[in-house]
Each structure stands twice: as C-alpha cells, then as structure tokens.
Picture (cartoon, helix red, strand yellow):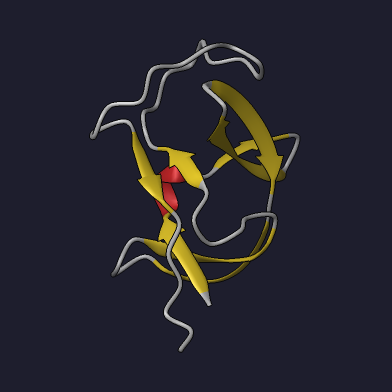
Length: 84
C-alpha cells in the first residue's frame, strides 16, 4: 500500500490529483484513492503514483503543470510503500 498525507491531494471537478516533480518540472498526476484515515491524516493511493516519485507538498495555488521548480527539503516528499 502507498499512502500519502491528505493535504498532498488536490481536486478539480471531483477528480483527485497530486503534483509530482520530474526533471525539474511540475507534473499533474491523476490518482485513484482508497482508504483514508483522518486521524492519521493519510490516504491510500491505489493508482497514479509509483514508489520513489517525488510529490509536491507545498500548497501554492498558482502552480501549473510544466512550470520549472527547484526542490527543497520542505517542498517535496518521496513516495514510500510499506510493502515488504
């Protein structure tokens, strides 16, 4: 299972997505969500992300796909999995 904080997920027209970072550019990625825990502030991502991808954590309303970015420690997290 891959889980990310609920705050990483955005929505437009009812469709959830996250911003990932690839080669210094922002990529908008549709995701399929599963179970969520508001207590732990986590949501399962069933489709749309790959373990090791960097997910943008900053909530900046002016972000657009294709925009160049410089990654800092506070702006992105790497997707991890608890699969063994």
